[in-house]
Length: 404
Ligand SMILES: Nc1nc2c(c(=O)[nH]1)N[C@H]1C(S)=C(S)[C@@H](COP(=O)(O)OP(=O)(O)OC[C@H]3O[C@@H](n4cnc5c(N)ncnc54)[C@H](O)[C@@H]3O)O[C@H]1N2
Ligand code: MOO
Image 1: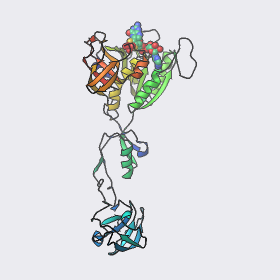
Image 2 (image 1 turned 90 degrees about the horizontal axis):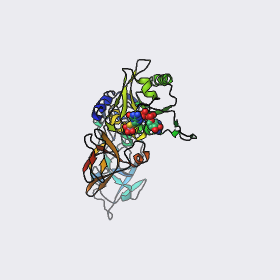
Image 3 (image 1 turned 120 degrees about the vertical axis):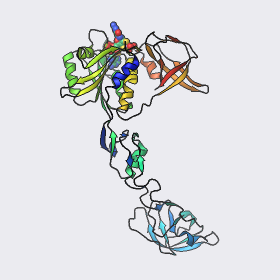
Image 4 (image 1 turned 60 degrees about the vertical axis):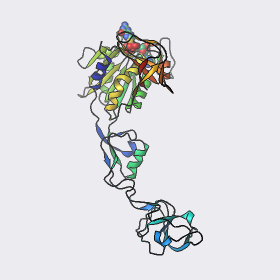
């Protein structure tokens, strides 16, 4: 049997380096910057007022008090958006709004609250220091300075900054198109009636969600019959556009294993047993599409817990790396709250609930190890990682935990 870490390396080798694509900023949410982005312009682009008030020369109102205010004629109104260049004539004030360009010659803004709000003439009751309430050109970022570093995941603030800089396109690591192809004649799409022996298809939606959550563009397809030729024809079609194919089911030792039957005896995909529970039967390789593309394909076992745990252990880290994304799963040590057993010679990933207590991290194992218990998977927020050479761990011991 192959070790988990060896199979991780084999799967990871199927993924290439991130590919750069230039996309409109409007569609770049969630993308990862491929390069450092330098500001093409400074922000703010010009000196402007931080307050609604009056642009003045500070030395002309330095004596202003409530008892002895200074009166100045108001020579201009400057709303935000006024585009002409103005100069403040000595002995006057300009009524100015937040974001409006400062007139040349003015070196401070008096907030309207400190005045009588006059429109022809303003009475100023307080002095202000030179420079007060002015947002200087380039004080946020200067033209040519790094705005966003390479490898940044673009969220709302970053998209706001790109827009503020007037950028319409951004180079990002391309999101990979992942196809999740579930197989199994017993599987029925939720919403349809079930006959005896049939179950609802759950791996497809689950793995598609996992791939999407990992940052990929994931599509779910469901293949129903056990016809090997038809299955290969389906893969031929998918391999024309998918970057990664993930199948679930049909890889163990049974008589109707469409995935294994379609891909075995080829040099392209290998089927192996990995010393792991859940997730022992695995397959991976490159599917040779008719157009010459060799698309990474990872064939996961059908048992639901096995398929999701396998995705976490083998696919998620290299999938994210191939999109420029860091591995964001945290591995930590926690105290086990009850005894567990583990099959000798297999690395076990048990479902657990991780709690952060005053005395440190504690993890409660939940559910049996069998790989059809979706309920416990849905309750878990962590996987407890029990090494291959350990067959029992007692309560109170420290264990490795992968936080989900
Ligand atoms: N004789 C042996 N039998 C089995 C072995 C073995 O080594 N020898 N391995 C067992 C282990 S471990 C696993 S895991 C499974 C893997 O089986 P397959 O990958 O071939 O998956 P299926 O047989 O198609 O399905 C297994 C199980 O999972 C259910 N399933 C499958 N797909 C879905 C889906 N999309 N949504 C919900 N449930 C799904 C399916 O109905 C089966 O109950 O093999 C063991 N057997
Ligand atoms: O190894 Mo299977 O994946 O436990 O049920």
